[in-house]
Image (cartoon, rainbow, N blue to C red; front, top):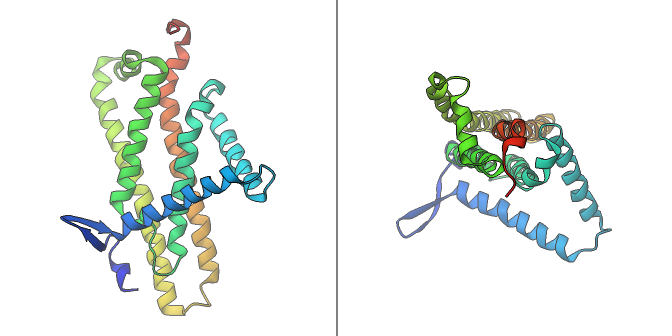
Length: 229
């Protein structure tokens, strides 16, 4: 448990580049997803794994459909589903002995938040054009432009800190109970860890979805004014 003191200890060096345990664990999570995708590709469509993941995707698609208009669901689904599943698995990695969740490292959650920030503008520009997308920052008055810009950065910062703080405190609480009570008593706490990991992944993905919906809203309201390409 010595490594628990740091969320980003260096595992090895690649020349001047230090590879931390956060990077290694993140690569491990991505490798798991790659293996899973390859397994699905070569498995039959009636396999239990295929049916399970299909049910998960359908559930995520339904959640997206409750926030976005039907025309935008399919465009946003790959990104939001990948984000949701990655954050969920990354949160649960902390349950594995000697491993830490990548999301307990602020640099990892900041990278995810920046990804959400960039995707929000990507979907907004793709849906209604860059002129219409950025015009709504000056509505209803140009005086509000600085406040809209500040809010973009503050909500991105809040998104990163919220996930980092919750997962860090969750792992620290679990570690303290393990040190004090041993390995048999805190089984209910581990279940709480699972529930909290799921909740935090859901909140992160839902906030990202709401931000994307806000970027698409100007285009949806003025759809008739946008020429067809």
